Length: 460
Ligand code: ASP
Image (tube, rainbow, N blue to C red; front, side):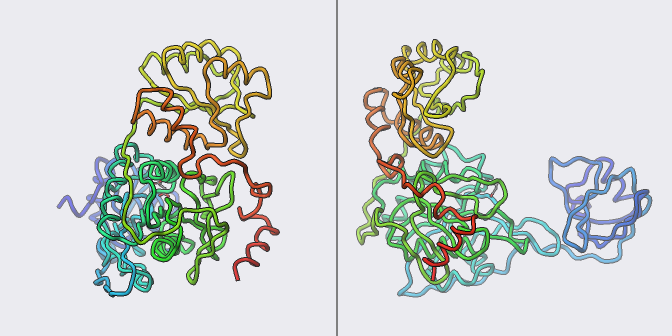
């Protein structure tokens, strides 16, 4: 019986039972605020017990408050299909072999068109069923490593992924794709860039901003672009592949250490910061936008460095930040702090003594800039010089999140702060650059008419 009322409890369950209405039934609902017609959707474990969720004919879901319901009548019933029809992924001798790792996020699921229920889509057969074009690009095998939204990714997952990627490359794969939630994809990308060094094949992270039940979903096209990049691109680096422009014209490949999610809802949310993207990709071709990248090789040698010290913190400075923020990190045993400072790399004077105390206790402190574009320049103002005298080390133009990840990775390998400094200040995969392009701040970042025009010219 319980299955008929999937997820409903308390008052909401009572109402469904009273009117003899099941989950997945087409139902007319009369309420004191008007009448609704739709499909009763299941509820999640943590949802409240005072609403019945209806999927309306226009595709929207509404929550109907139980205390407004005066009558409910079921007039049809069709249980959702939780499984996408599996088709066997065709294997062809002359196609590149690609491995897709799933970690979760929106890309890992698709919504049932009729009901709005989330369906996991992860075997190659299911993916082939959902995105048949993938079979024209490669032989695809998949493995679900995690099924989490990306705020739940962290050092343990980075290490597991790095090791799994190393094994697949050594087994002979021609490229790796990683399905990932978009929110923290840039953290994972930089962690993998440090942990998987000198890869002979592309390693491409991909996600989607809009779930695939929406007409504007970017899931299928991002997956096609990412798989094409993994299978055919000459760029053997850790990259993020997501929509380039606001329309679905092309995707961009961003270097894993120079990329950032910059918009909470746009599909073209990922931007390369402090540089231009590595390449453009569409269904036909991959167009590199520069020459400076690690090339694909025939060998399958790769160096895996799965280290991470978790007692590190990223502190975003704000005016009037109190020194006890730093003190409490030190008192709690944190070994490293990355500060995202104002302007060229500053914090207020009251924080100085706390910083001095931290560095004198052997806590590594690195400075980055909140502006994201540009470098820390701590020689310009005496305040910057003071901070350096207190042991703060400027981290050039490393993005704050990347410096945080790199510091965790460096402290995971050694306690010797000179060695940590060496690791932090020696670029490994583009995380710091000698200069930022004079026009990179605007060019190839989409969104303004001249830029779109420029891209259309390159993109013939
Ligand atoms: N919150 C989701 C995540 O980052 C969003 C997405 O998948 O795009 O996992």
